[in-house]
Amino acid sequence: MTGRAPRDAGTKHPVDPDQLEVAEGARHEKLEGWVPELASDDELRLALERAFDYRGDITITKRNGHKIEGYIFDRRTGPTLAESVVRIIPSNSRDKVSIPYSDIAALAFTGRDTAAGKSWESWVRKYWEKRAAGETGIQIEPEKLE
Image (cartoon, rainbow, N blue to C red; front, side, top):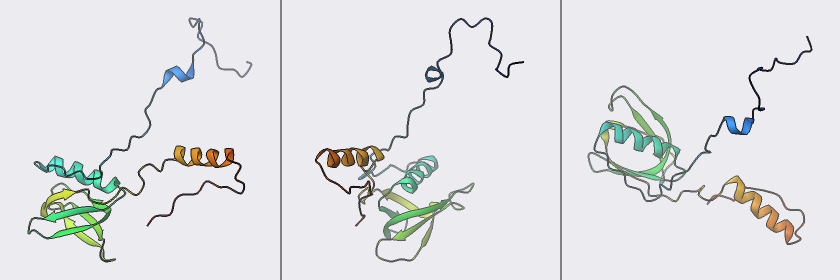
């Protein structure tokens, strides 16, 4: 034995690994300003999943009319809306507030998406632009958040 994997005698053309698998990269939806319809339990669950992945503030309107704007940092899904909870840090305090899904009447993506347009590719492009302009001592660093 030579240690090489056996070749399929019926294969006449070598296999091109680039042709075997084609997968799209992650797509980020533009959610800033979106107010989803929450007509069903599934729509509410889907909207809250998107809110969890959003990098800006969300405004939740509770069934009693009270509004809370802040950053959703956690969610815990259960078999029912009453047993599912979203956790938010309000923009006007550092307290962590838990809200059952069943208490949510409306949801709005009201805050600016702090990571929009800040992809790795844009950072690299800025680096090469600075380097081409003759700047020295440059680094690729994330922009400071507000």
